[in-house]
Image (cartoon, rainbow, N blue to C red):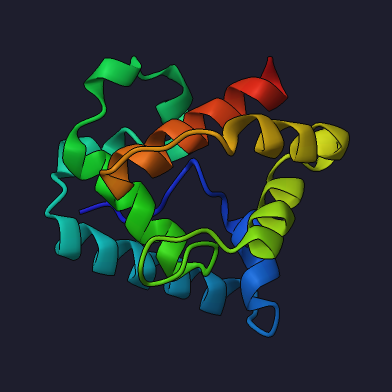
Length: 139
């Protein structure tokens, strides 16, 4: 099973695990991905859709519930959402500023715009929030 995540590149994650060298970081990313894959029961085919930023090209209607929950799990594992699925604002800002380093000026306005998204299902909430932020920043 493939456990790397294209949507959250290793370089972005490196900020959260700064003391690690590249090999340790890659192993950490694989481990976190494997933990989330096991927790939510995501299939190999679903996982492959996350590779190399392919998730940007996926029709939103093709994201399964498990894929959305995988995204929530990943956000929890890297520390931008707490164990209850609540966002950690400072960490989210840092994460998205690293992810969109050439468009940092768009991050806070995008986060403010997308903060109004409310879903009872936390997996759906994180998915819609992620997509909203990406669209607001990328245009």
